[in-house]
Image (tube, rainbow, N blue to C red; front, side, top):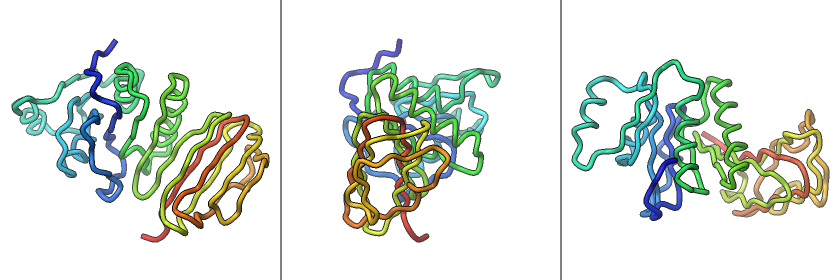
Length: 223
């Protein structure tokens, strides 16, 4: 079991996938910063020094590995073998969960590797089972998983895309307000695309469902 001071209420985890500094929101005093291997580069690029760095370190060059161990009040470094049955991203998420953190943001978690993207996405299910919420943030996109009965609020600019993707055969009682195509106690079916490419008409939309599991994707329009 990981023991972390109770002052941390949110975890910011940096993975080694696609990342834009515009995705990053200023860290707060209660944030635990964790870098999964090469995600260290993303954290350093936005001026953050992590509390924890973990992984097999195949994406961090030797000079940087040496330098981080020489920092004053340096981070906790946890090195794992390359031959393991969990990704560095999962190890980072589990560290946050073991610390009792219920609000986890996963940066650099999407990218050109569809297998890693899906693997990171389904870490949200791991978090839900342990009473936490995972938000994936990468290149103008935010992704959350909703396990009904539940409600989530999506904030952004008018015109931003919001897509609702069922992960169970049906997702029932879907109500969505603040969108161009509102829903009222509707049912969405796995394998159909009805929920894709809706748009925000206000700066905040509310999505709720009474049964099923739903992926909610908020994407910025434009470059």
